[in-house]
Amino acid sequence: MKIAIIGAGYGGMAAAWDLKKAGHDVVIFESANYVGGLASGFKEPHWDWSVEKFYHHWFQSDSEMLGLIRELGLEDKVMFPRPLTVMYHKKKWYPFDSILNALRFPGLGFGLNKIRFGFVGLFLRLTNNWKALEKVTAHEWMLKYAGKQVYEQMWKPLLIGKFGPFYKDVNMAWMWARIKARTTRLGTFEGGFQKFADLFGEKLREQGVEIRLGVSIEAITKNQTSSGLGVDGESFDKVLVTTSPNLMAKLCPELPE
Image (tube, rainbow, N blue to C red):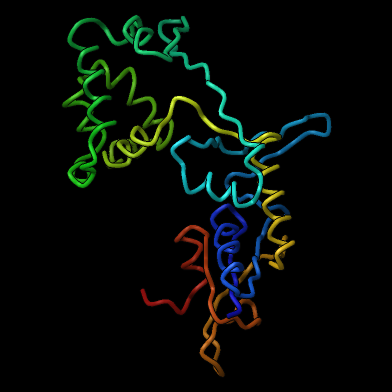
């Protein structure tokens, strides 16, 4: 089949890699002049590494991603340094990268608060029952089980930093997934994530995938004379859209409401 992929982020490129291996002809359309999507970065001429436009890292538990990197032959460029984690409290920085340092941190109070903090973290790391957590927000769950002081000091700032005014609407299953997957060491790529994206793009081109950069797709429509789809007048058997659902709705005006 001839397949179009809209978006040259990691998702679009990973799909192109698998589809090309399966024997399909693949064309990637990307509106930016570079690959990488939300994990792309910028780099000044005198910098050795790029800096991500949006913060990214890999966990050591990200087996699918790390498996793909091995397939690409780039595993020797992946790094898992141990980060320095600190908390800011009353104009002072406190190390927060071990159980002992967490117990010493004054922002959690003393006694019961620290016990609740520890049990909440342990429960979320051990439980696999995420469906039950879908029924409650992280705001409600953390207030109930972690307590007000721990929630206000630890979890609420993280939610606000990620979701802004919508932090009270975030599902607790989302928070569970972040804590469950987290590993002590965080992974990055030598040279930055943009370097990885560029090398990934090169590997795809070597396999025969066509990547069209700086091309904005206006519409995806049904072909009138065949069973395929049209992407700005060009025919494809299938189209995979890796953009946000909002943008996809605009690209596909013929989709049912």
